Image (cartoon, rainbow, N blue to C red):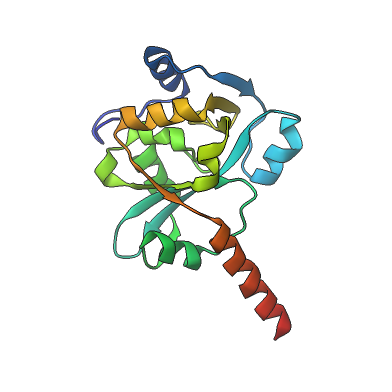
Length: 185
């Protein structure tokens, strides 16, 4: 983890950290990706769980990085209630860079290496904790990095971040019910 006054680390620094911690990883290069849909089209049969990430800012302060399975369909308002934040919006690009050291399209849980634990809340989809492999961008969106769930836990411990583990299934059910109610009106 780095202090805000220091330079944020990038992909090379992340991989140096992984090697220092004995974390095995697989690096997959690809054209720049900005959406889950683009990722699905280009990745082929890359094994493991693929993630979707949201960088949220609460109106009255408070930041959250949310990492869930890529196919989760949820409403931000339901997520806010579940994690205890109010009036959230997606963090602006300048805040994203200042806080996590990444640009839009490259949001990743690996960016936690660039922020002190008290400066952001990390929310993790419970379904990801039972996956063998996790795939996420390595602080830029022209590659995907796969590491084991156990190694991801070691990475989090090293950065000092505790994950708020959240069951996203009820959030998806609420989103489906909301969509059905809108269609019924």
